[in-house]
Length: 112
Image (cartoon, rainbow, N blue to C red; front, side, top):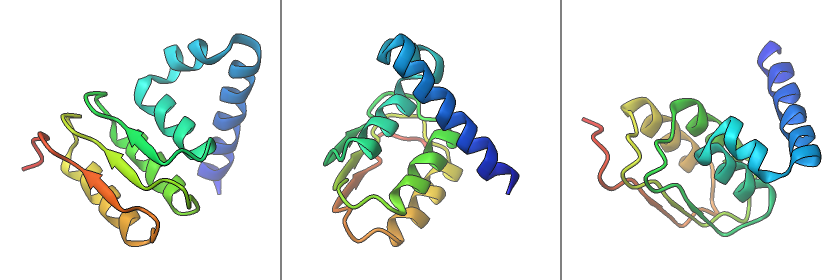
C-alpha cells in the first residue's frame, strides 16, 4: 500500500515538473532511461529504445509494471545498458504477462 502511495506522488511530481518546466526538467531529474520509459508507456509508442542508457533496476521495475497494462509497445531494445541479473529477471516476469510485446533485445549486457 505504501509503495502505491509513493508511486502515485512520484508520478504526480513528474507531471507537475513537466507542466511547469517542460520535458528537459524531467529528463534532468529522473534520467534518460526513465524519461524514455514514461514517454513510451504514456504516448502509446510502438518501440522503446533504451540502448546505452544505463537502465537501473528501479527503472526496469517501473517498465515491467507499465507492461502489465500496456497494449501498444511491441519492441524494446536494451542493448549495452549494464543490466543486472535482477533487472533481466524482472523483465522476464513482465514479458510472460504481455501478449503484445513481440521483440526484446538484451545484447551486450554482462548478466552472468
